Image 1: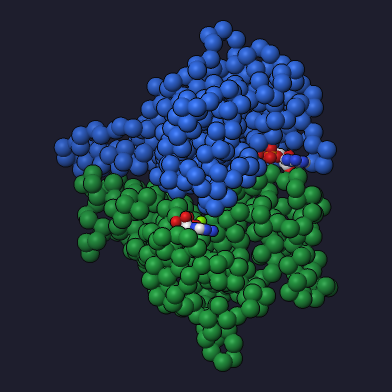
Image 2 (image 1 turned 120 degrees about the vertical axis):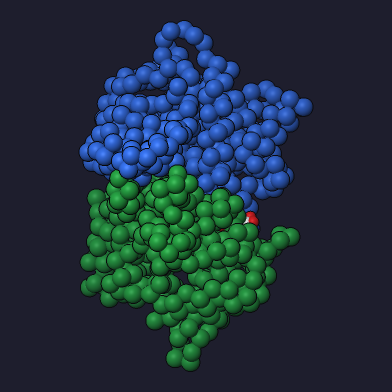
Length: 293
Length: 299
Ligand SMILES: Nc1ncnc2c1ncn2[C@@H]1O[C@H](COP(=O)(O)OP(=O)(O)OP(=O)(O)O)[C@@H](O)[C@H]1O
Ligand SMILES: Nc1ncnc2c1ncn2[C@@H]1O[C@H](COP(=O)(O)OP(=O)(O)O)[C@@H](O)[C@H]1O
Ligand SMILES: [Mg+2]
Ligand SMILES: [Mg+2]
């Protein structure tokens, strides 16, 4: 299964004075669950486009450096730019930030089948794959509906289901829960987590709100104006509230509570040896608070 | 332009049903009234009927049965152009409302239809662009903007109309934290100046911080109509409608059993309360109370 190595990646869109990504270096192991965050315009979508091959295959611009897919071929690593788009589509599935624009079929079921047919899935398996993807996204009841008649969140669920059905080795998702209700967000993230844990699928997801993702991911990458400002496991990254504030990214409430407890004088500084780990979930924040009472 | 003080509700919805030709019954009989000057959040699961409901407030959709009155007048009998002068609508998908090739023209479209020309028009457009931080893109093609920026462009085009009522379908989706805060600050300021604001959102923290009243829609029906704090006390109803408590509210509720209270609804207030409680327990000096902020808009 391929890992991804990004080396000194600089990318500029045509007619743009400053690059959207600047000398980015990042290695993503096979089976990792990575969250990319940062303010709008920080370069999240651009980075994802460089990974899934939209850049340079479809989006013009100036690209320096390399994005390598390791062990994608028997001959070792190859740059994304030299793998054809259809071949990339065989193992990288992408959900774009404009779900409506991604949907091409008039009927929900056909939208899910479309990708499966294109990747040569055995027709005998198709029905099961479609049913499972729809169920995973909570839209089994929409199977025969016209895609144009769906609500915004329903469309986003269809776009995600269509990609999940393909069972790609790498999943690249650009703000996939922006219009999902809290229930749907939880359901989709749970599916991603299970794909990652049980099937070793690499997950790369860009999100503004990292609260729900923090307990699920291995690593958070914070982008600032096209550069990596901070990265690491969530508990490490959340030690730096000032960087979050500076970058305009919201620190999740459980972590904020820990910092506020330090301020209030009931917890030692979080980087001291006797400090508890930063809570990632409401459950952990609750337990921590309980211990102080 | 604050609405007239007529004593009657600004928007009155009576037994509203809406049936889409290809989607079945999206609204199954909704009744509610909205007064001038309110700031209301509309919440509910995907497909609940939020967009369908609010599109009736400015005639983008017409009732299958039932009526929607705007300032006492039946919207079914009012021309769309007249409705558009009173009720502005920011679409969930910005691409459904952006048509021009230059951002300035996009924003100027509505005010021009209102008869504005020359300096007055330019000032109106430029201040709307400034409010949403898109001044630098004034002469660019909206098609080149990111989705989040296009959404703010759509907001600007409605702001430039200065309508008495502004409806926003998921105004902060695709926006980062600072932009969301900025958008909500604009809406609160408009609300303070007398505009009625109705926003749809899935972000319960936004509801907690910015709405005075929340409408919970599920399966085409109005299930709960209450202040946010009351909604958050009904966790069962909330989860069965596909929603969740915001994390701070959930923490607050779980800690309430241990004597922890945070009326401000912030983690800072929670931490202060925990500190006070823990110092009481250890019989030390109590910490100074330090609650501020929160749902200030609802005094
Ligand atoms: N143009 C349409 N034609 C047919 N059915 C529609 C149409 N638009 C919406 N519907 C259906 O009506 C119901 C309510 O849709 P609506 O768009 O109002 O939901 P919503 O609450 O705004 O959801 P979301 O959170 O996903 O935006 C859904 O079942 C949807 O599929
Ligand atoms: N298609 C495009 N054409 C020109 N510039 C773009 C395009 N997409 C993004 N940009 C610019 O590249 C930078 C990074 O944007 P993007 O990757 O979309 O950030 P994010 O996803 O973090 O919001 C921004 O300055 C943005 O304006
Ligand atoms: Mg993006
Ligand atoms: Mg909607």
